[in-house]
Image (cartoon, rainbow, N blue to C red; front, side, top):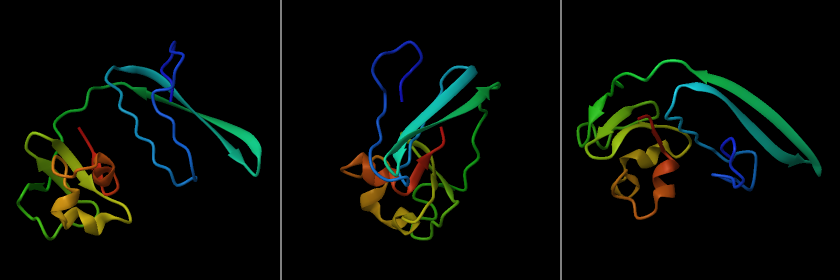
Amino acid sequence: MKAVGETEPEQVVSGTTDALVSLQVSELGEYTVRVTGRVDGALEQANYEFSVITEQGDIEYDYLYPEGFGNYVAGDVVKFEGEGIYECYGPWAAHCNDEAFLPGVASDPNWVEQQWRKLD
């Protein structure tokens, strides 16, 4: 992704259509996300427009880690002190109960992002 007025992309995702891209917006306003890719060799592009009109309030969570650890399932929202609030999600959700994949613990941040979605 490339910020408006910038020449270099902030985030480039290569690979399959299953690639996940996250976008964090820190200011209120109007935004457009342009997705470009190749489908059967042809270049295709889609624009997605959205508005951020209010600041996000406090996020409710189900557990304050380590509370509930070992029983997390997809959809559970957990607050990790010093790391933030995350939602357990996706096909890797079973790994939400593995210490090696926890926010602030995993040796590779990509391991965290496979099953934890940062909400704050």
